[in-house]
Amino acid sequence: MPDIVILDGYTTNPGDLSWDPIAALGNFQVHDRTPENKIIERSRGADILVVNKTRLDRQLMEQLPGLRLICTLATGYNNIDIPGARHCGITVCNAVGYSTPSVAQHVFSLLLEMTNHVALHNQSVQDQGWTNAPDWCYWKETLSELTAKTMGIYGFGKIGRQVAQIALAFGMQVIANRRDLSQTPPPGVEYVGLEKLFANSDVLTLHAPLSEENAGVVNANNLSLMKPSAYLINTGRGGLVNEADVRKALLEGKIAGAGLDVLSKEPPPPGHPLIGLKNCILTPHQAWATQESRGRLIQIVAENISAFLEGKPQFVVSE
Image (cartoon, rainbow, N blue to C red; front, top):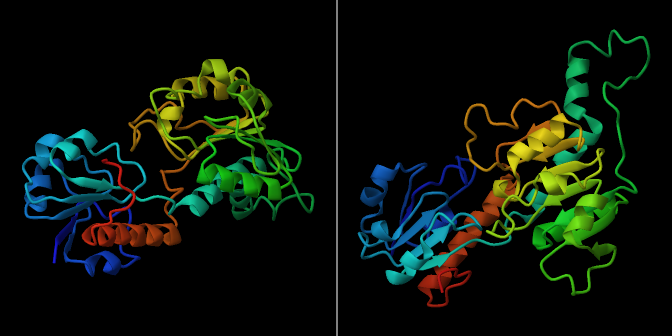
């Protein structure tokens, strides 16, 4: 039986799920969090490490001669030194597809909060605003509907496609930007270039992986193309956004609002430029984290481990 150690399991399972699918595969240990100075101690003797955001570099791997497999409790794996893993003969597998419904749902949670201001009006009612109102209804901010608005999607993988389906159900027009614009888009979707995406979107939502080429793609130049009534949503990667430029655009009314679940640095430092703005909603990188999504994640990691032990590894990112 292999020795399996999870170094930072808390964000995936703070106690409301079972680790049994993974625990059944070997001698199992789980740690909620592992500080850097405890990684070697806790990993020594492990055949398989499971990590979420814990950083594993070549120098560390070289001190773990028995380590054969690293599985990520995530799709991203930039915290793992992939060339270092190859050098050490360690297979690295990520988890794919578990969060698609949850992230797409969160996109519209952010969007509907910006268009319908549900929290604002609930708080007004709780504060006796409705009880003391002279009329039978009221609204404290302008309400707007999504029908006939244009949803622009930057990055058109699984999550982008799920967002498109929901947008179409709302009666929205959907345009999308992806690397290959030559392919035939699905019904109801038009592929467009980057400039048209920014200029035509009433809602722009980001779903592309972060790369050197697209870091800071939401910047002052592209924001200047957007409608002053447009909303920006980011549930992808914080690095896609130049946060200082977005702050300026929000303060100057260049865009109407932003809903962001990810930031360039997480947790954000004190004084972050987007905290405290009335027209910017921030959530703590939770779009992926429904209970159902986290349950699927545990199951996928268990399947990755099982496939590796059977000599047929899947979702390998270290080849």
